[in-house]
Length: 333
Image 1 (cartoon, rainbow, N blue to C red):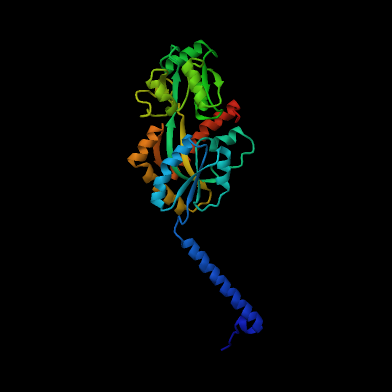
Image 2: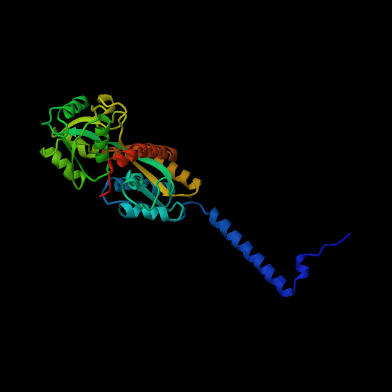
């Protein structure tokens, strides 16, 4: 029987030793990688990047961070970085589950309003959980005679271009809700733009503006006080955040829907097992009575949705708002 010599036999002793050392090095590296991959997640603090301190996204982060810390056994840090900065930072972060982003509509609508946006909402982020949703409310100053959506549309048609509405930042939900209403109703309001939702609400309360589409948190205290009139909510279904107020769709504009969406995201290519673990713990946290109530009191509904639900909500919103923004030529301020 022919004996085939080992490759080592044809090498010099020095080459043999070099190969043995290289094999040992590769073996040690493989053991290290295996041990690292086997290390349970999380093994260090997790950071949730969000926007301005005190805003709705910051509040969402601070609602879930303590509960998530308890569930994960690691500190969860809320890191306020500002709008565009927070989005860019997380898109470029390692896909290891330690850097997360809480964001709303600007994450997926800014690409329609600004050139050279450095991220794509569907490509550069992995959805983790649908956190919260919130309606806007169509409200009017008491001096406006219309007391329903049908009456308002009729009044606007009888007085084309005379009625006005106040809103804050271009492209924000209050602005887009007003523009979608006009587009679907075939009417035209004059928009009075302000630097934020606060001044826009003040303009309505003082009678400087006749209409507005603020979020529930901004509108409901003044509706309850009788300072403004709640005509309709912008969601497809009535909202407990605006008790007794019908939807726009059922009040004269079928098919109308607009809501604010807040979600948690990780960098794209984050391992699915980490996404699943985070989603499970966040859903548990949001479903506790304490957190549900805190979210409700802030003017939103706890959604506690799966990654697929967040993706579906974003795609639906992009189909509506993206088309609207492009048709109207809305640009970011």
